[in-house]
Length: 108
Image (cartoon, rainbow, N blue to C red; front, side, top):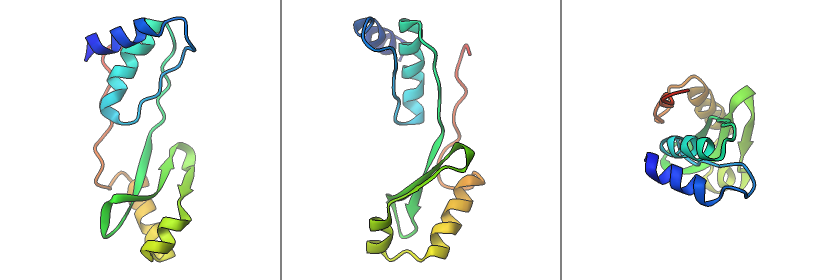
């Protein structure tokens, strides 16, 4: 991964100095991009709120500081009761959801 992140960072050096990573595996690439650009790395951990009977379908997300975004259309169409939305959110915020732990970043 180091090579790809370094090469990507080198190729965009001089452009705007930010990098966005969509999943925890890509954070390691974003780290190399940030290093190549000499830019800071800021990681925001967000957990998907899955529709209980369809885990690939996200009905929202929760982030740091209790930030919550709900796709009301998905909740309505999937007929997820408000209590179930709250239960999924509580489980994710407690770290008991199906997601993986965020790996440590080497050299930070």
